[in-house]
Length: 130
Image (cartoon, rainbow, N blue to C red; front, top):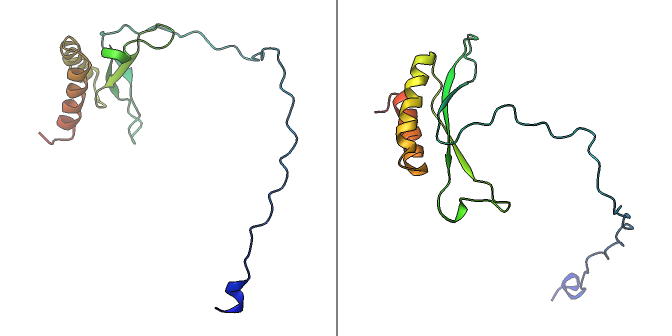
């Protein structure tokens, strides 16, 4: 073997870790308390929300619905209902978004899976693929 292979190179020794900080046992105080939710959306009830602005500055609207999850994931650790938010495509008129709301509410009766499939169908029709 060549002389360079016979010598074994070791990686440099690790440096000692920095001293640990002392953790206070008193609870942390928030400078800004968490704000209360403005309006609690109803589960299974669709609503119209503002969408992203178009390049022209024109407002858009979207249908949105909260659906309760099913099965083992229905409740979180504190017993609150877990929800899934399904949103429709951006619409230029509130009438189109209201029609999407109606479709979401019909699909929500069958559960979250049907609601998600309705959202996918609405997205496809918006893009002209159906």
